[in-house]
Every structure is written in C-alpha cells, then in structure tokens.
Length: 365
Image (tube, rainbow, N blue to C red; front, side, top):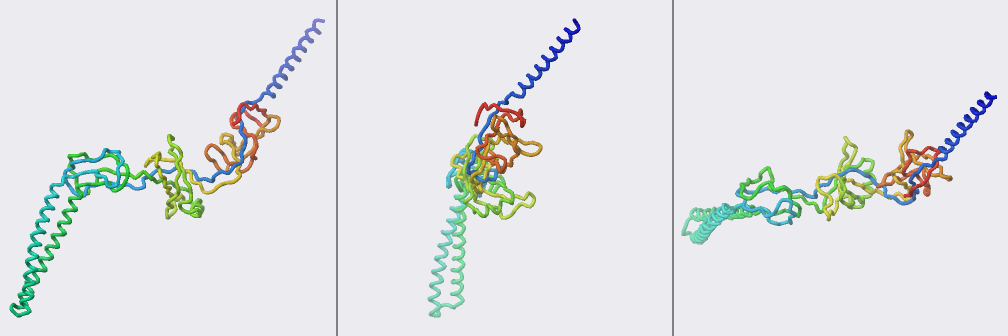
C-alpha cells in the first residue's frame, strides 16, 4: 500500500511539473514585443545626387607691391571685410615724388628747346624759299627740330611712368572681399613683385561649391542646362542651415581615372554660412519622383539576403518583407517595391522580432 501511495505522489508531481512547463511556454508564446511603428506614405520626392563638395571663393587675389620701399601704413586689420578701391597699404612716396619732379623738369627743359628748334626750322624754311640759305642748312635745322620733338615725347613718357610708379605707392583693393593673414607690418621694407603677397583677399559673397558626380549623371545634367539645376549645401559639422544655389559650371572633360565630372554651383552666401575651404554635404536635384512610397530610414534593416522591413499585420503579428530602396533623402527611404502606402512598418525594436512574434505598439511616428 505504501508503494502505491509513493507512486501516486510521484505521478502527481510529474504531471504538475509538465503542466507548469506548458504554462510557461504558453506565456512565452503570448509575450508581445514593444515596438515603435510608422505608416508608409505616398508623396512626391526629388531625385537627388548626394555627394561631398568643397567651398571655394569666387575670386582670390594675392596683393603684392609693384614698387619697392618702406611700408608706412596698413589701412585695415587682418580678417576685415574690404571694398573695391579701399586703400590697403601706403608705401613711402618721397623717392617717387622726386623722380616725378625730375622727369617733369626734364620735360620742361626739352619742350623749351623744342620750341626754339621749331622756330629756327620755320625761319629757315622761309629763307630757303628765297635762296638766302642752302637747302642743306635748312634740312639741318629741320632735323634738329625733329630730334627735339622726339626728346620731348620721351620726356612725356618718363613723366607718365613716374606718375605710374608714384600711384603704385598706394595699394587699393581690387575687389570686395575678406582679407586673410597680414604678411607684413608697417615700418618694414617691401619688394616689388615679391613672391610672398602682402595679404590675400577672398571673395565669399557669392561663393562656389565644387563637387564631382558620376559620369552617368552627365547626360541628365546637360539636358537640364546650367542655371536650371538646383543645388543645396550644408556644412558637415552642422551649425548652419541648408543653403540653396544653382549649377553654373560643368567641366569640359570627364576624369578618366575616377569616372566623375567636376561641377560647380554658385551660392549667394549672404549669411556666410559657407566658408572657403570647408567640406559640405551637397544635394543636386535632377528631377521629381511622383507618388513615391516613403518610410523612415530606420525601418529598413540589412540582412544576409538584402534589405527588409517588418510590416505589422492584422492581429498584431509581423511580416518580414524584402524591399528595394531606390533613394535615401534626409531620414527617409524611398521604396521601389515591398511596401505599399498605408502599411505600418516597425521603426524600432526589430532586433527582438521574428516572423511569429506579436507586437505591442508603444509609439507611432
């Protein structure tokens, strides 16, 4: 009798253990995975080429002295904005003023001699007509007048050159722009046409953004025409909004080593958010894709068989669907196939999902 009782108790324990395991499995099967979801939308999206570009000034001028001398004055601070015609540097003018005065004195002397020579030639021209003097004497005075005339012309050229050299003592800005580092200070001697410029000026309003695109895009770019292709750019480091510009330059040859062609877009850059030399994110809009299916970019996952998304089905189940992403724009993915407008896709929590999972929506985007 005791043996039967022991066996009955053991059987009851086994049944209880099996029932408990079944209950746990049932609970695991009914567990819902919390996820964040979003609805696939249908809208028009621009077809864009996204690359990295660099900012270049429209114009760069290295300012150099054209005459030698002591630098007396610097009319700006490095990093200042300057206007076209603004006085930048003043070189000691006294040696060039003295050279101009000497050239003017030489001109005055030789012009006086010219007047005398012309008067003599005119007087001898009348005498030779009356045979009072020989033609040889007349021609000697006529030649003297011509020589005096040439000397006076050379003096006038010397005066002009002296004036020009004197004008070079004042160095003015050739354009509107922003100055860089100052390479020489007042009191130093400067050389004419020195290899090191006194300062470099960059024009940054407007500004160029240079970038390269695959040669496969060239035909479409040329079909649109310069000035008709909108381009946007924003600094990679952030801190400034997206700036709008237009394509203004297409290079005359494709780079055979990279298979790309260089383009330039012009930006007004009125707020100066684009700075020469920095790298920027460039988006060139070529056309518009109408009625495209769009989902948040974080909904798209990468697997061994390619990209896929989880779509929430009726009964809070999920279905894993392979998708084709034809374009990424901002934080959205344009889906070629695999998702229809109105489908609910999982945007967060995919790591815990399987095709048999049930989900609990904790947030909708």
